[in-house]
Length: 337
Image 1 (cartoon, rainbow, N blue to C red):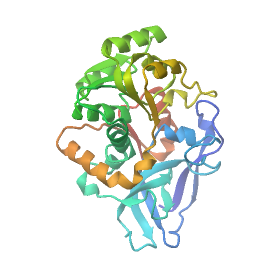
Image 2 (image 1 turned 60 degrees about the horizontal axis):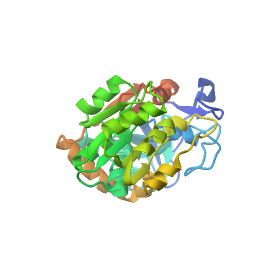
Image 3 (image 1 turned 180 degrees about the vertical axis):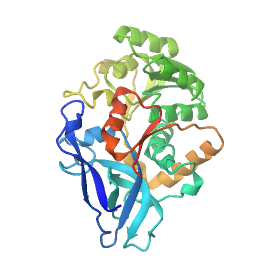
Image 4 (image 1 turned 45 degrees about the vertical axis):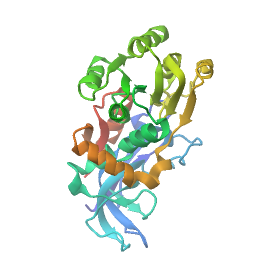
């Protein structure tokens, strides 16, 4: 290619992102910087976290600068290199952007990957990438599940939630998932092996509390939280004594001008529960370890990882919005090349 297409953040979204918040432009293909590499991106991960990075607000990562390409984890091929550790033609994964070519400096999240070991290079954005490793470390290291415990997962049909539930079964837990719609609840049980599924759609607070109680009559020992808002409010009324809440995501609130937060903290107090804020970046130094174990479970057929691959950088906005409509049917990935 003679041009570098870039999907830019043109203005900061207010509430739900609009198409006018972004711009697709063409620039010259950059050169590899001294000591760095130029990556031809083939696949990019689309994640709820990107919505938070678009706001000019304090967070665990700096906001995406206006006029810059939207930050994203990508897998691609080294197109040019000024670093002896990376050769032209080598597959790599890194935190780059929604663009054809990204300049990258080795270190941090940039690493070589073995695409011969997987069915598709995109697997490094799902089961063997941040999604799978979020489930792996968030559940097994932070929550530390014990056999016979009840694990309650919100956003359970999503990429992280479905992996968490399957890992919970491997750990010997009874797993209950919360998802939106009958089809997603069917998938939880038939495709991912959950023991029970709760459909949150069409339920007010009291009805959702009751539905969770029916599915988890002894309460939840572990809550793996991906949704927040009314779902989290219903969950805290169904905690077992000394429950552990792993706060991984709050997707229901990302587009809200005012964040709801967690009310009913009294329930957390009375059940002597703990709430642990979790970010996968804290485990970057152990990605190889977690990835090897996830790859083994995939090969053994004990873990299923579905991907929803959307085509074309020109469709980045429409693809990204699938996250918030619930249209995606697996880890959402954008094929760029």
